[in-house]
Amino acid sequence: MQKNPFLKRENLFVKKMEEGLDYIKSYDIDLYNETSLEIEKIKNSYPNKEDSFVRDIEMRSLISPIVLDIFKKSGKKLELSSTIYKCTNCKYILTNEKEVSIDGRYEIINDNCFYFSPQVETLIFEEGIKWINDNACINLPNLKTVYFPKTLEGLYSHCFANCKNLEHVHFKNQNANIDPSSFQNTKWFSQFNDEFIIINNQLLKYNGSAKEVIIPEGVTSINFEVFNENELIEKVVFPVSLQKICVASFGGCSNLKEAVFLGDNVKAILPMAFDGCKNLKEIFLPKSLKEIGCEAFSKHTTIICHKDNPKMIKYIKNNYPRYKIKED
Image (cartoon, rainbow, N blue to C red; front, side, top):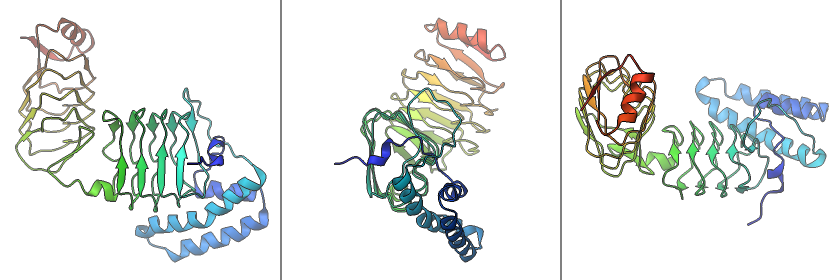
């Protein structure tokens, strides 16, 4: 499998239609005028807001080969990002290939990285890549298959959203964090229609309506806002396998009265996890807990700490004096 020679051109960062047109304008004013007229025709063909997705795809399909051709002929670069990153970023990829393998020397795949490569059908992220940023591969109409490496640590919001034909996703790292919106509106994600949507041992979404929710054994993480503002749930039972409760997982669950931990493997309860749970009068924290985030609980909740976890008791008293705390 050959790597695309243009993948090393990380300094080219063109991610919006207007910026693409400006890039053409800086190279050939006549070509710019011609392209602008075609863009206006496309815009006029889709006057309604609900047609914006189709309109954007058509505009990109028009302008992508032009930008790619200019880049190949002139090597003219356009740097639009002033952000300084500690890690090596793949800012932008220009390619007309259907299968693209992204070099593992890039730790981060930036937002809108494939904006002008809508024809891509297969993406292979090589070992070394750690994070796929917000909107990195959003709105790719022809994308069907994605391969992730063992080094993957996280997929951020909407990174593959609206890739409507994406139906094959392959993970090697079962602990990589997945934002619930990462695969929104894709064929692959639509197949998960059970009560609990669990991917990589992470609970991404809850489709049920029960008052008592028993999280399935094997789940290691309750992800961002899974139960947020759920006013039906009154009791939740966490499995032995659980290790982390993420930000705002149960935020605003105003009728939640009881949270039961069956196991002792939970390491972290992140910020606002139970914020706004005004009827959760007390919660017994497992002795395994090592991290608790700010505003993790409401002012109505008494925190009961295990006597065998004195570090956590001290940490809460020193950092969250407003919390009501008891030792068991």
